[in-house]
Each structure stands twice: as C-alpha cells, then as structure tokens.
Amino acid sequence: AHGYQISNYGYPPLQCQLREFVTAEYSLSPRESQRSDWECAVSANGTRAKMADYARLLRDEYAAKRQPVLISLAPSWDYHGVFEAEGYKTHFINLSPLDSFSPNVEEILAGIDLITKDASLAPMFALNPQQNPTGVNWTQDTVDRILEELVQRDIPLLLDDAHFSTLNISEEPTKALRTVLKLAEGTSYRWLHVRSLGKQFGCNGWGIGVVCGPTKLLESLLSEYSSERHYNINGLAQYAFSRFLLTEDASDYTLRRRKLISQTRQQFCDLLESELGFPSFFRASCTNFQLFPVPQRYQVPEGVLEFVKRSVLEAGVLFTSAWPLPYDSSNLARYDFARVYLTPTENAMIDAVDRLKKIGMYYDA
Image (cartoon, rainbow, N blue to C red; front, side, top):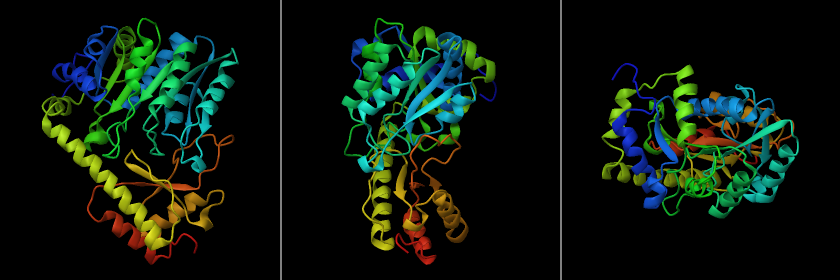
C-alpha cells in the first residue's frame, strides 16, 4: 500500500468500479457502458498530471511537425500552465460578464476556425462544461454543437469534468461524456476525459480521480507517457475509495455537499449586497467558487490584485483574482472580478464579510 503498484490503471478493485460509477453518473445505456472501444482508469497522481501526459502524447502522435495549440475559454483554470510547459501555444476565447459568462457558440466556432485555417498549427480543445472559475453549467445544446464540430474536424478533445458534482441541488449537470461516446463511436477520434474526485468528496489532496478515453489511446497514455514521469501510487487512498465510491453514503455525502455549497454561495452573495452595498451580480450554479466584482475603485488595471492584497493583509480574508495564474493577457478582456472559495465551514462567510466591513471595503467607498 505504501509503495509503487504494478497496474498503470490503478488499484484493480477501484478501477473495476469506475465504469459502473461513470455509467451511473452520465446516464449511459447498457450498450454504451459495455462498449470495448473506451476504458476507465484511476488517476492516482492528480488529473493535472494526466493532462500533461495527454499533451505530450498529442504533441508526438498528432501534431507531428506542426505547432500544437490549445484552444479554450477565458477566464480559465490553468490549462495555460499545463500545456505551455509541453511546448503548446494557447488561444483563449473571452467569456463576457455582460452575458453572465455564458458561452457564445458562434464566437467559439469562429475561434476554432481562426486556428484551423493555419496549416502550420495543430489545434486541440479543452472543454470544461461546469466551467471553472465562472461557475456556469453550459447547456447540453451548446456542448453538443461544439463537440460535433470538433469530431467533424478531428480536433482532439480534453474533457475536464472536475466540477461535475458541485452543481446546485436543483439542477442537473450537463453530460458531455455521453455525447463524446456517441459521436466518437466507430472513429479514431482522440479524446480524454478527466474528473477529479476531490471536488466532489472534499479530498483534493488525495489526488484521486477518473480518467477515460479510447482503449488504445489510454493504453498508450498510461503505459508509455505516464510511466515516464510518475508511478501509480496513493494505494491507501485508492483502497479507501474502493470501499466507499459506490455506496449510499457516497451518494448522500455528494447531495449534502452540493446543498451546502449552494447555501454558502447564496449567503455570501446576499451579504455582499446587503452589508457592503454590492450591486446584484451573476450567481454561479456550480464549482466550489464564486466570482464577484471588486469595489469600484479597484476596477482599474492591476486593481484586482490590490484588492486581493488589501483584503488579506488588513482583514485576513483571502481571495484570488478571477484568473490568478500567469498567462498572456494581450488579447484577452480584463476581468475586474475576484474569486472566493465557498468553504463549508459554518459562519465563515459571515466572518469574512464582517472583517471586510471593518476596513471599509464597501463597493462604492
């Protein structure tokens, strides 16, 4: 349990459970579930590591001598850091707060067109349907249209479902994986699905998740690329998940956590408006985060960082910017938004807003 494991697919009892887990979570039919052209494995080193392995695989087997380019949406999780480290360029398409950060399919398709017109570039696309950090659960129609275009053009896909089970209790998450399986059947289309279990079960530090993909691609990924940089470890955590994942306790915990995140989000947003004079703003429906506009005096270049710095140093309240990691912002919109982690700790949001109030962090002050 404390050492390396022989199986690159993870602790075998847990790996055997993952297809049943994925089948239930994504409402797959018996036929879809039993198909032999796709497989599941345990991601035991963090899904970020599997993304990097996939980036190298595509760079070697798909891009050839072309420049690989990752296309995704902004603001974003740190796809930039993962893929640029593997020799990729990145191309981000702006999401607008004026549209509640909802994706515009025509703009996304135009962005894909822009990259595919250059024969020297090899595009791939990162799709995050429960989008981090905006917290928008993209509609099934939007996701289906994008996926149809990607498969038709043979543009490889990274499907990142990290926040699939953090949705408001009254909503259903969009199930992009089901569409991928439908569209990719009988083709050689390249795709990889990653899903951290840490967001769902509050154990991010364990590094345990699910990775799915075409059977041959996954074999190459795990046996050749993953083994170059890391071993399959975390045996005790994998064993614990194998005893828990398919139980009623796991389902009950997920529902309770979704409800708590939703309640904490509502409480924080209500407090900003009632106690600090913030205007009404978009309230997310998923992820463990909530974006909010910074006070007016900080809505200037570098203002968000100043807001974050003052909040932590004077009030002891830690926020981040909407996109806290380094990236090339030359062709991107400026986002005058900060991000809060919706901690499930009781009264944490009340305490945070009280602290901001004491230093005069009102919206229009």
